[in-house]
Image (cartoon, rainbow, N blue to C red; front, side):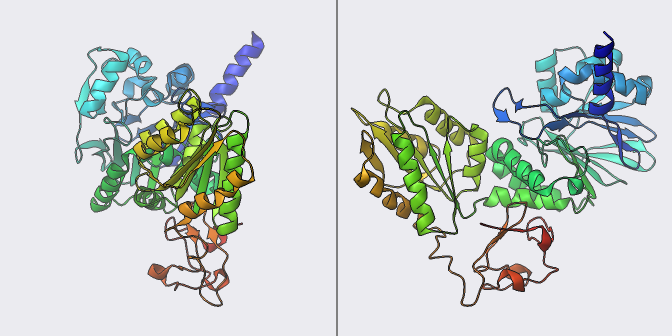
Length: 479
């Protein structure tokens, strides 16, 4: 019993956080180092996560969201130690999903009269999940304000489909903090709390992986909302998302990154994906990858077996790729169910319109797999090349030689090595920022005073990434 009590204390002190952020604002969320899956088993967690809730203590005391139900007891116990619940004036619920509203029923049992500020759609999602209890809902729209005293206000901004219809963000005047809910977050446990203190490679990798798998289906809304937030001229000095690190140094760099990812996230990379039964299709996949690297040495080529790598990790690579090759053996007049499921997942992300793809696969008897896979990839939005490899039984040298045709089809019209040849005297090496932007000497950065053909060593030392504004020193050479 003693050890169990002690373990509970450790959870309370370490995982349930109250950390000062700015002014009278504190983080009171849950740091989940052990989380491995999210959205059921749909999203893979590699670096932990957090459920960020916030406490604002001005003349009025305001709670911003809660945490997931499995952590409700620790959260409520800690909250009672930090603030007298009777003196809490309202809670702002920016999104009704369980990881943010899971402790709301426990809170409302303690304070059934507590006003809840949320969107009209959030009323539906909260009552739909937790039941109709006569809670005191105050429905808000973009531009509505709540005076919280000391000359400060909360300004509400509806964020529909980022990533639920009920989502919104909240801007705190005076401290100039944007509480952005799921937008601009990452599934990343950051004990240091701030983005500038986190490992930059991991931070930006997780931020983009989060965008690719959770936000990208709503890219048109992202573009619209980024423009809307910019047009509001809010003096944003800090962005506090509901997951991961808080953006405090140049916080708009993540907003700009969202704009880039929504417009065109592709880099000079091609992803080869396959499922296999007896390794024949696997051999074709590696032959295609070898040909791609041979024909375009500077293109990043990665190969994934759909049965060995989480689909969200592969989708993240596809998100950044200019082209994809995908293969499956024929089985039961179709393709492997793992390959079919992955193509369905790609279709649901709604981000593949116009990207090149090619199909390949082995068969023993009927051989319909390529036809089925071609239709699946077309339905997912890809421009599927006519060139394919359809191999009877295990591939022989003549079959493997067809990989060159697949490589040509995927590289045609894209920035292949021959198209990327740098100007005379330029360094052909490319350099990547942690945010994903790649500096290409052949292209330079003319908008920021770096002409095409400028080798990396000639780029000014005070030049910064045009997407996230990290310094030149943060870049790493592309192998």
